[in-house]
Image (cartoon, rainbow, N blue to C red; front, side, top):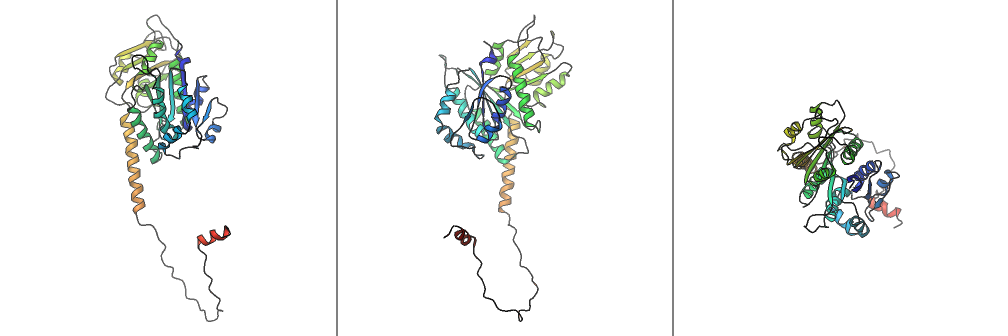
Length: 355
């Protein structure tokens, strides 16, 4: 089985569509779903753009997802008809269409079970977390979405993109697509050992967070590890050293580019360490990590703080105009004119409407 050929990229909402486009350019199968025709047009000439009828965006209210999906039976059948075994759900945690629909779509995809009661499909969410400076609504949406993802049984590896890592979100999307493609499509081999497809699939099946680092020759090992755990495009990992699997594809025929023990020291002692050799670049992956709760909590705290400040401002005394001290005017020589009553805005509106 070619693991790359068995993947499907499903982009939800505006950001999901943009990430999907990056994978289309790398010849992956998939689709983009959105209620906004404008967002679809912005994607240009990409295949399989699905329009959610009756919902031209959710206006920041992710709870509308239930009504949207209930009113789009064709889309539900479309999702149920995805044949590929590995589905990546691409979306923004701070948005509303993607963050609202993603947890529900994930549960739909996990419904089909094998004889042992395990999900037939491997479902991997890719959630772009909002930057710290973004709005209260986006922080709140992301917090609620991560809470919901944590409750889904049988969910595969979740990738948390950190929009604080770069102001250019297109750069983050492109970088992620490039790294995941390297991970999925690598066919390098060596006499010592190989990081084969079954091992990569095992990592994708790991419930919890997953991070990747892809670097060229000459990159210092400390930088490799920092990009994996702290300074890369993914949310910083928790410091509790919980890790299920580590995968390394060395760019050489030896371990001179990175030592597995150095990776373990950063992410924790895993059940397995999978290693391959002679890759185009050095690829490091860690899966089965705890969700980046500390980072997401900060977003939640920002939302609480912003809301409290907003409420204080609303309750504060509104600015009012004081009385004007006008100079006295001698009216003895002025002719008296009848006083005209000023029309109210409602009366003006009625006049314009011919009432």
